[in-house]
Image (cartoon, rainbow, N blue to C red; front, side, top):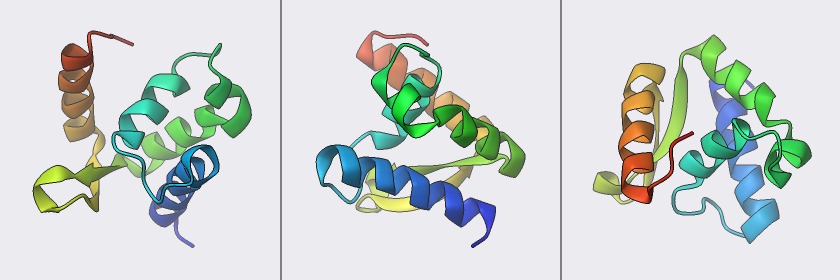
Length: 95
């Protein structure tokens, strides 16, 4: 398994373990948020720092593209950073 696919698989497993869902809506945002919060349960349970390191190594992140019927799409970290910034603004949380 290549590293891009490894990241997708690890993200999907978190959704399956936590919510019995193939890919929870906004999963990519929650993982990123909790990966930057050492006090979160997900941070402790799923070694999220590894996912962030992996994302940096492969220069991208998986998202569920709402415009493509939630198809999983690998995007650049630059594009992801902008999406995450917009999401946190809408949510009222900045991490």
